[in-house]
Image (cartoon, rainbow, N blue to C red; front, side, top):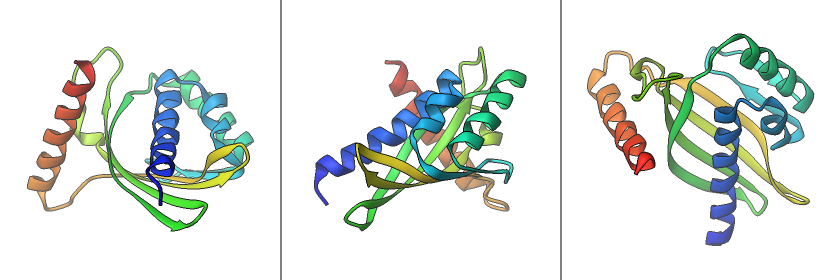
Length: 153
């Protein structure tokens, strides 16, 4: 696939995290296809733009959510108009300066190309617990802290 498409998929993912970090449920949901879906960190599911916006609206109203710091691991095309993006994320608590390693996560985003451009068809966020493998958890935390530091400079 052309680099331009790769950049567009990466930009869509960055926009998704930016809208989360801005705590804007309407704009976050607007990046999805009409029937897009989300599996949240706790396993909760949201289906369709309206449900995504409504659910996140309640979350943002009731909880001071942390901001994402991400590292994209891969963009893989599964068709001419479909791409899978895999990433890892850390979260910086409100008024915090460092990521909270206990909520590091692995994310997958399935993107589809529709008029007028790329949209999220499915977004999955799962804990990066690495049960029984503390070395992998620490390695990820080190990588995410470096990404956070790079973002600040």
